[in-house]
Length: 97
Image (cartoon, rainbow, N blue to C red; front, side, top):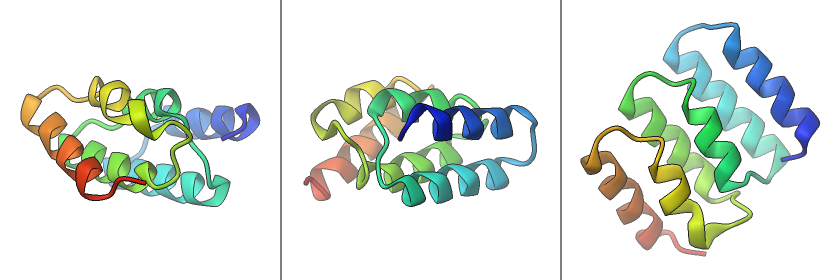
């Protein structure tokens, strides 16, 4: 995702709203951009409060990642619980590029 699109999305997420709206915004923007780095996704997930929303957005972003081999490690750091990291890694294994 180019920096202009990323910065606009961050600005939108900073304004608040529900987790559902934030997750929807992340998913929609990533899909439209057709690219997201693992680092960008990890930063975006910081705006989502609940692990279920983080996991939903992280899974949706995986198909558009520009660095699939480090996605699990980098994005996994955005999760507070090891069980959520395990779920993300299982998803990645099942959906590898």
